[in-house]
Image 1 (cartoon, one colour):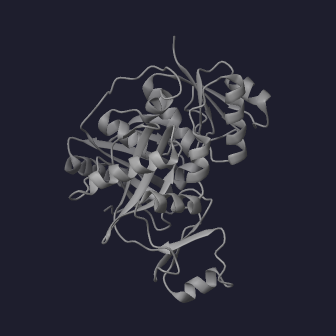
Image 2 (cartoon, helix red, strand yellow; image 1 turned 90 degrees about the vertical axis):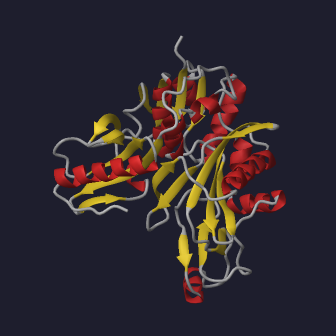
Image 3 (tube, one colour; image 1 turned 60 degrees about the vertical axis):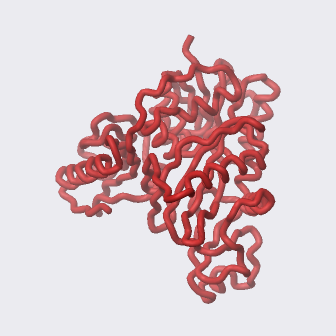
Length: 379
């Protein structure tokens, strides 16, 4: 019998979950309050349904084998967790770990208690500083404060309640997922991240090559954090390789976007399956590929030109579909259609090693530029 997974949320995380489930050979039922949610066309069945109570969840997921949340609305997540407890349907999610990880102030306290190095907090830290909303995910609201004048403009009264203000740490970014239960956590494949001008991730490389002993340190930080959270489920850790060493920026105890796809196409490990099997028996797909270098990058065509930018491109796109051999990329998740003036795509490009993947990337961008008569120089 085919395993059927319910997915609550059709945005970036829902897109990730729907793709990973499809590659695992599972059936999916996806629910979102938006009729044109980005992931709506990626699922086997889509329900346009605002979830307000147990009856809505039963209607949507009553015939599923498990449910994974793919949203960040805390009341909705609390409702789903309560319904799962009462109905007995497995919900692949750790609500209590998520409560801590979504709050950057609580997360910072966790890092301190666990002895995990993090950026120095203001006022001990000097300029430049980074200001982040304490309860926001990803790059939303992140602001660089280069000088005291910038700080005063941002916080005229000096009150930073609801914000984390810390030292700006320059350097490359990396991410690592961990799964498991207390006493039995495992870290997976490290990925390298590249950000756009608003600190939104625009490109993921896998596997990442950390210098020296930093790979071992990152894995240690990930497992320490999972243990400190008492994690039952999946989380990711994002770090900066700063001049003074690795610094943990944030954690998210939920299914992330982008990096699980890069992990799958590089190592063959499906992190959605690894998450789900913690909560219930499910088919574990055999790794289709392994040992490949992967570049996962966002591209957008607009009347103004062709560009690579952060994943916010995809949250405004849709409905999305999967297209193979997309202008030379192995695969794309995209809302492209011939003749369409504006569209976005998440491009998956692979090679035998990092150099081959980079050469593939340049070829794809050159094809896009020729096809759409726009110039774009990539790094």
